[in-house]
Length: 402
Image (cartoon, rainbow, N blue to C red; front, top):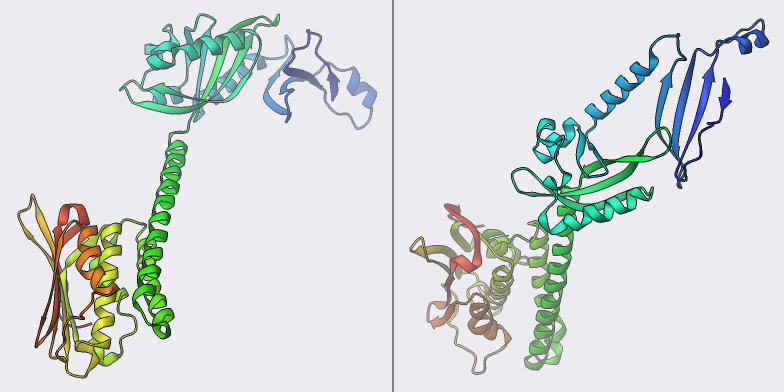
């Protein structure tokens, strides 16, 4: 193989080398070198860092076949089969070629675009980009990873990454422009989703810290010193279990039955048998789930310490559902204790009572009633379903005990 450097004037961004290929001769290398080349390979490389091969063209000298035509056919096949849109235009921005990938990407056939201005696919608010691109290319520059938007035939916008290069004649004169367009819409959507998620995580983290601060502050002001740490720990663990469920359900919400389960983690087998839950498959929004979860924790803790679950005969029924019209359904939750010891409301409202009577109903924009009777206490919550329920069916989740 004999390397022959190009005789044409150098280009500031691209280089070309020609390799003359001759047949080998084991008997006489000198004889092989004296024979005419079988073919010549022209290799065009980018001189920018990192160096890379742009394309390779193989051809035979005159009178030794028709490799030029074969090479051109090969290049044409590569352009046709490319998954990226490959387009060329003249210096007046008139389209001169339009490959099948461009047809798929933009919705226009080659017949519709060749001979037409490239402005046809540029949104009206981005037409100045074409002026900028043409000025740079006419100066011999190559624009790589130029991210922009173009318009599909049906009107929707497409996020693209463009590589734009000048097309030169054999004399080195710039006679046109080539564009390679890659659809990056999915990547941009993923980036936007990540940004939204980060903002949402930041917002929810701040809310969660505010809730934790309120729990600690309120618990500390109303709890004896010897019970302070266990109370705060139990409430923070209840909050954490709710967060775990939100993560498990990708922050869409928490199914009602899973929420009830999560706030009763320390019940023994006997207590579990005395709890009956019933309700349709409802998923609460994250805000509603956090507020209802806090209320369920306070109810379960109180039942274990003072109410129906503090002895061996009491029972607890947890029921939820939807009522009212389809346009404005109402979400309801009932906690009813029976068969346990007689309980009376504390003379001063503690943190748990504040959660049940104020915090939870306010968070759901609803109302709550806490009642005490000789048979046991009950708590009823009602709130608009549209703002607090992600989705529901009327299929019961459970009709008996855990």
